[in-house]
Length: 247
Image 1 (cartoon, rainbow, N blue to C red):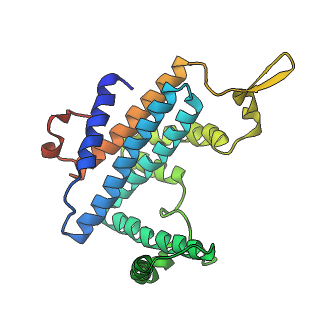
Image 2 (tube, rainbow, N blue to C red):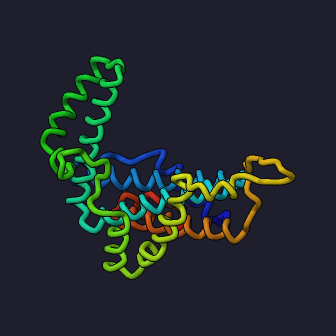
Image 3 (cartoon, rainbow, N blue to C red):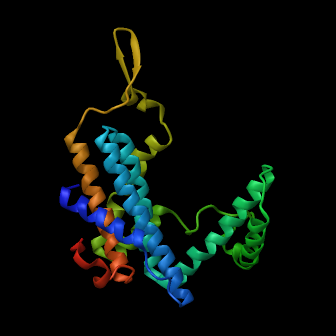
């Protein structure tokens, strides 16, 4: 990622840190919630990847890019049917909060009266929407989106040829990098060195500029798609961007 783009991301981070007034329209506030969440997450991922690359942790930086890919696909998928999917996004927060609250109590965690009060308010919302997030056995699904990440990426590519990169990059991002995520045994030879009958842990990758360049290119693509969508939703506007420039 070039210095100019890195500086733009830092200025975007400052802008989001200042924040915006919450929309007075319920549907607008839900869109704003989803958009601000995905945009903030994207900027944090870019920062994390840059920091990891600076420490020679290219493999770990790739894992962050995989996470960023997932959030980019979900955000753009949400925007295909904006109000309905923003509503689903919002409803999923009520379901997840209730599930986390149950887990906390089951583990014997202390609950303050104020927390119990807010949990009960959320429970009312949960009861209205939880059936939309159940699987065939009645169990709550952790994923708020239906289907697979592949199907969502492919639907985006079919609807907009500019998003073909999302479908095209699925296999190696979710195939190869899933091995890193799930600690495939063959990767031992990338995390360990064997010399003179001694095995050692490797804690900094030799700089492979082609790998670093690929990470930087992917960050540019996924951040660019996310920021442009935030502008299209007017979460970021020409007025608020000011001197930030274009993405």
